Image 1 (tube, one colour):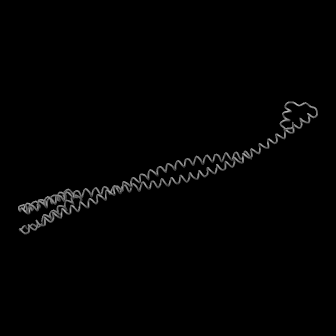
Image 2 (cartoon, helix red, strand yellow):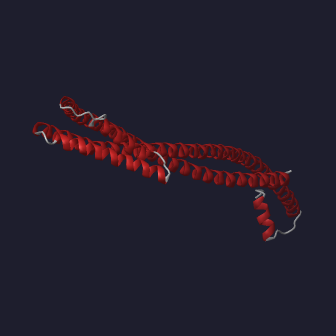
Image 3 (cartoon, rainbow, N blue to C red):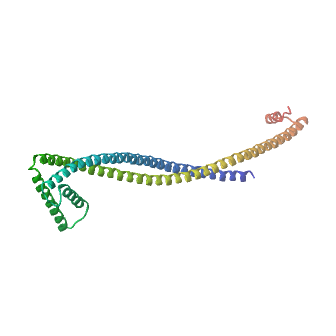
Length: 286
């Protein structure tokens, strides 16, 4: 029975070591996934912060666009007022041109916008450029007529200056609008990167939880084996102690019997040897 218990204890000990080794492996795996998750979460925060920074820059650029548009429109309005006065002067003095400078300028701006934003064949684009040139020549001709009158020349100069300033502000509007779009694109890109990073982090967290739960199960099994080992140690220790006590009792009984035999022989007149005396002492008969 004792040997069977010892063999069973060896089996439990082997199982305990297996659970311990597997637990340590799973804990290491869980730690790896935790590090990956934490790094990805940190990266996600960086992407979100960068997206927020670009959002703020985009919003500021859009505000600047609106302010520049208002400034440009104000300058154009001042130029328009002067051009209307110039048109009125032309009509009063018998100039019968079908299109005034203000209308011609609008047509030029429209054509230039088309040239910048639409795709033309080579011939069509050349044709558009020639039309723009013709309109500019017509504007110069009308302006030349007006410049012959001192008062009109002053108004024309002021109108041109307002137009020039409006054109500069419009160029700034375009730059700011492009800047706002760049920051918007960067904001969107960083939010998308944050989403991808967050998804990967969530997957790493899921794997971390699975590995940690498996490690906890192995640790629980390891503790169960340790409890069984302690129980086996108690039983085996008790059996060994009892066996030892039984063996000592048997030895003492045999010594007692031998001592009684020697003592009987001594009473019959036989001599005792040193070993006989020692045996009698052990049996506490002398």
